[in-house]
Length: 417
Image (cartoon, rainbow, N blue to C red; front, side, top):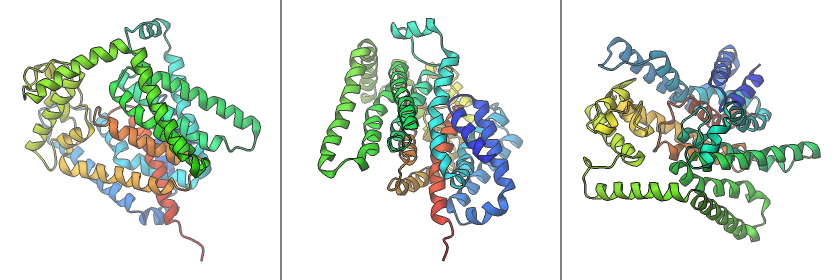
């Protein structure tokens, strides 16, 4: 049952929100049912206790917002669900079952890009496709362009990393079938990244794609040829940059002009006259969020406060657009949950990165590489968007951090004398 739920989570992470919720709920119930076996092991994991403390803090913030509401309105169930998932409960639950069923990890991660591909097929519209190709639109497929670009990049990273295990399969028909599948994933993911026309995703791709390619090829490369691998990775980055410049010259030049004007005004310190564009809006929202945070620096303003403060922003262009968050995860956490909430989040996130660092050494499947690079991509993107409130972000963090938790639990497993 738990194995099936893990597979559903892998498929549903980038496909349908309902699938992801059902899978996580099932895994949580099964963990509770297995508490007699899981309890002693989890009790030795400090990650479990910090997660429990974080969830307690979120629950107290939630109750405070419920019984002593501010002037803003919030949807209690939806707000708390997103933060509970990202409160690393989902990562803890997923990690425990990946620890129990380690052989399923590869299959779960192979299903992640499949979920995105099936969603693209269901959302396909030839009219919109031609508009995008002709330069009048961006790929979205049920998400914002920024979110879709992020999911496409994560699928590409996962596809490249899993090549490590597929090339070593002994069954020829499985090897060639999965190689073909992963090559399709990488190509389609690359096109998704390009045609999302998202600058932050483009910039991260230039680093992430060559980096994951290097990590994947590293153990199969003789030391005398490591320099060749590094040059090849640099060439991949160069080709990607040139491809963006050639295919989207008009988009890049237009956005560069707008960005350049914004930065010149920032240097002069003139925030009031900034031309409104995505860069200036994010900078204005970040500044607004930090000012809001300073009013209550330790505990923040609580659930649902970000939209209220943005609607009452001192920047007119921001106020009229009804943004739901500050488009910056650290700033959003500071504004709503203060230094305490941000500290919990950062400790658990970096603990996951630390656990994965140790798992990379003996990683033959590529799952740890995919998770480490996935967290890198989402960590950088969190400064340009708010990954917590996205419908699919919590599922991806559950999987990536879940692999880290599984590695941590493996080290704590009692050894036979």
